[in-house]
Image (cartoon, rainbow, N blue to C red; front, side):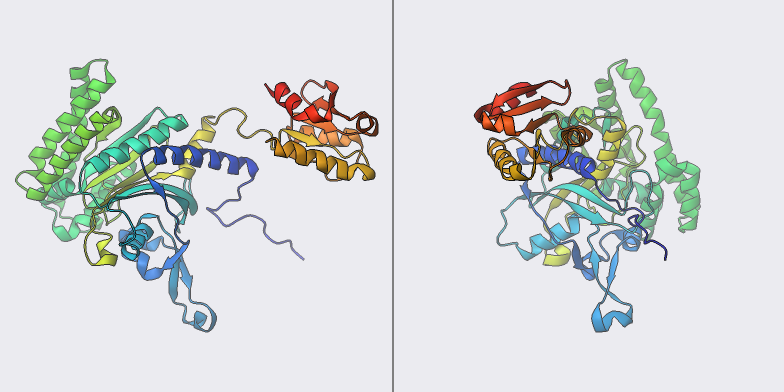
Length: 464
């Protein structure tokens, strides 16, 4: 008889204690930052009705939704009526439509929960992973975009990141560039999906995909000409700014905005999009994060629900991004029947943890001892005494493990050492008779007697 497979499904993982501690640390830091910006917590079910999700994520997104087949007597139909949550944004839109009369005028929420995608597993890319979202609903002001950029930036800085770039674009400005290049409206999504791969497959790859998606060759060449010409602006900005990277970034952003103004021409929506980009940059400057922002006209983001600014955070040595988002003023209207202004950003928690682990960015001692002290069991008669001592120490805010059975002291010490527990308390017959316990320092090997009433204080003094 062959043994059952013990690995989890591809793209999904078990989280051992050290992994969980890392994740909880990152979530704790992000929560603290989000709440500093006035965001409130929200949770939604793992499973949604399938019609809630279908049609919200574009062509590629629909194919990555984990569908759940009908159950019981309907199972034989092979049809799906439910699906695992693909992201946290569409469920948020559903919640806002459902509870519109109970929520504040400007609903600011953060949500940190797992999502599922039937994607191809790769480095830092999983089929089940956590997202950390912040969204603001109810305002069309560009202050919202600036606040989201600042909150996400602060969260990454608090985690220890210094080399990230916030890439910023605008869907309407991009649409105007597409129109003026000669790409027909019905081919915009095809062009955006291809352009979203520019960093991965290069201009030749994008041009080939344009052809496969039915984009007219002349329009495709004009479009690529605009985007590839932007590369020369970086060199010009370097010359203008000299050694100062902040001045260089400002000069580059101003130059790109100038090119965008030319490219959108008299397209009204496109010109408004460029104006909004300028407003976001001004507000980001007031918030102190403009130096981290790069206007990137090649940024497309594949999701079809974005209507305005689109944002993505990149790190130099990580393919893909650490998070992304943007404005989606029409999404809630799909559920509510009227549009509700909305803008959000999602940090990819798993990818953040991967990079932090590789770079050894977690605080020293984070994944060390599961307890401050271990209480031994001297013999069968002293089990109650050991449990009572452990309870006393826990009431004094110490993390206490209890060796679960009488055993040789050497084995109990070895077990504590294997778990990196720094101190062991022994309540032997002689110590108990004197109202004392023995405290062993596992690092130095030193052992001394302490009055039972003073154990907690002695342990704290030794920890310092």
